[in-house]
Length: 378
Image (cartoon, rainbow, N blue to C red):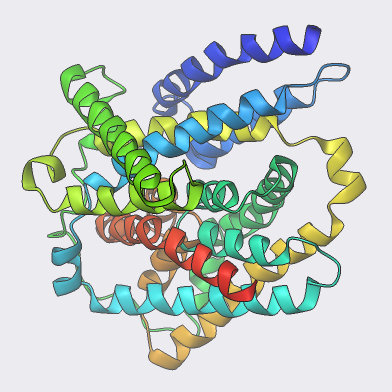
């Protein structure tokens, strides 16, 4: 009874906290340095590990899934794939070299750990999803493949640990080390307009509520259409069809100019990302983590550090410049929310728009790559 009461008290808290954290971001150096998403993960983890009280996993999994469904179209609405294809060849090359690294290392991890892990093919697919797109993709692929929520929580915790180490590397000594082997940055991406920069902060000021509502309603409509397509094709609500339907319809909607330029869709998606981080963080049970996650931790660590190393080696081979490599790696490993902090950390704000574009591409293709490889391995 106490667990149920605690869980349902967390829901309104998780809906309000992202707004508060984003408002405090301007005033707090700690929040700016760690980023709001990491703060939300940490808060969720702390609240989910209060001694003597547990959250109801099915409720938090439901909240996280709802956030996934609403956020994917909102993330894709503002993308401009044609503009990116015309002007971003070095960044695209670097990004897809990173994807090759993730595909190779996820496959190798599957081969290494398949005898010790029953869901190794699904885990490999989830790793591709998270390290080409983001945590939403990992969750979406996990749901589509019927992966247990505990596995997702452990993988997400491992991701926080290993990607956190890499994030710290990028913000501190990464640029200096890569400068030893890669050419310096020379291209100016300021003319890129993947995402309206004002969009990222608009909801902090409570502006244009009708635009936020319009984007949310459009996301809901896409979800309903995807559910209908799934029912027509399979006769039931099938998760893979729904997830891929939402992704495809979100991409298609982005080609409509009015939808692409609809203000505040990206910031609305960022809100759901923070809600998602809180909900998923609360699922990370440290007692279970210490008892049963060694193989999953090894799997995740192998993919993270192996794919980053392979990406770096390929970038040296193809002479990708330092900043482009950093921002494309950030887009793949972390996704759009981390582009700003990393660009600020390396002192190059010109690459923010390009990084966000790459991150959105990752969101768009992560589900296809993850589900495709998982089915192939299976």
